[in-house]
Structure formats: C-alpha cells, structure tokens
Length: 111
Length: 120
Image (cartoon, rainbow over all chains, first blue to last red; front, side, top):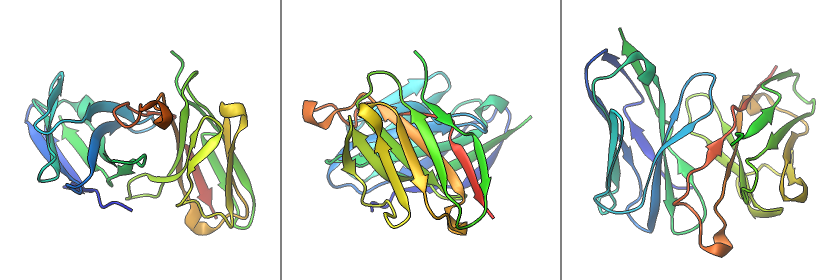
C-alpha cells in the first residue's frame, strides 16, 4: 500500500484569493500522477494526468506542477470562486497497475 | 458519451444483512474499478477488472466481499454479511486503459456518483 499524502486536509479561502495545496508520493517507480475534483453529490472528475517531471498543466484558473524526483505535486487555484469548493484528490500510479489515492484536500470558498 | 452509472445511490441496512451494488461502465472501457471511501480517508481500491478478468483484488476482504464483471461489461459488488465498519461510499470507475496494450495510468479514470452505504 503506497503512502500518498495530501496537505492540508482542509482549507477555507476568501472568494477572489488564490490558494495551493500539496500531494506527496513515493519518488521511486513513478509512472503517473492524477488530480481529481470531487464536488458534493457528484462524481469525482479528472482535472489532470501528469507523467513527466517538471510537467505543468492548466485548466482555466486551476493549474498543477509535478516534481517526480522529490515526490510532490502542487495544485493551484487562482482567484477562487464558490464553484471551486470541492475535495481535491490526487492519485499516484507507480510502474505497475495500481492507483493509490490520497485522503484529499477539502476546499471551501467563502463569498 | 454516457457516464458511469451506479445504483443504488443510497442504502441503509442492518449489520449481518447482505447488500449488492451495480455498476455500468462507459461503453468500450476495458478497465473497471471498485473503490471504498470511508469518511475522512481517500478512496481505497477494492478490486480492479480488465475486461472480465481480475487484475487486482489484494485489498478486497474476501470473507465477506465478492465482485464479478459480467461479460466484461457490468459489474456487481456484494457484501455478505455486512459489518458496521463497511459504512462508506462505494465508487465505481472505468478507464480505457488496458495493461496488455500498454495503455494504463496515463489515461484518466471516470467515476460514477457512488453508493453511500450505512450499516446500522
């Protein structure tokens, strides 16, 4: 069982502010790192799938970076909006077929 | 395209009773997963199918949990008998990844809405 850690567990952000949080994973045998957004009463939805060290991906106001050598990924939300309120899950895939999830970071955006 | 369908959405049962969950993945997706998410924890992989074969069931409590994937399409997950600690959200996901074709974790997983199980 792989140790995938996300921090912080939860955070509150004022509308319009930017924020970021971390996913840490084992740095050996890296294959891919996934980010998912899980809104209440909905299905988890993929944000990014990252495979290369130094990768940086962006979708609207959300972006992610990846450092496979040191085993971490950051997710950034720029200018947070109430619709960004969700739990953000990262999942790590080593060089086999298992996808291990972190516990998630729950973001609450206050108007 | 239609998403991953799961039913029921909610289920409340008494301990020692049985329960079954159903999942219909996205058409054409070779890989299907069942995850268990206990409150405050990340999703834990219970079982992974590729087509109708089991790829990984190492974390499935086989004394009480069973799963099958009918003809490589729909899947059911059963708990018999249920315990209080089985209270969780059960998520089904599918992906087009196929290990044998070298398509795997660089493809995203698509999730259903989950079944929230409460065992009382």
